[in-house]
Length: 159
Image (cartoon, rainbow, N blue to C red):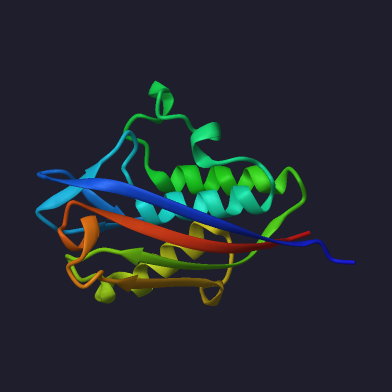
């Protein structure tokens, strides 16, 4: 019998003027960026949590704590690769990822294919196994008021 598991991830970061914005491993040109210990890539962080959760391996903060200088300013693609390596220690590989980022601005539709390819390359899967969607919150909540953004991810892993 094949061992198949599903995990769910969520992340949120505050936005502030003058900082860099990375989403799905791709730099996004915008006047605001993430307030974060790492590069703040909310999409990758949600994906890491989904993968770790599916494998029963806690969460991103447990493995890559924001209290550690080792992860200060780190590229989240490195965290994603390490997460894929971590689940592999239990014999798991990524089946597919479905994710959504909630962000009022900027519009990231033109960048989604690049994000999917970047994530697929880091994870080591075909690009058709990675889904990235974007939504606004119709100007409601902290995302709609452009105070921050959130990301959600579901991951399927298998042995």
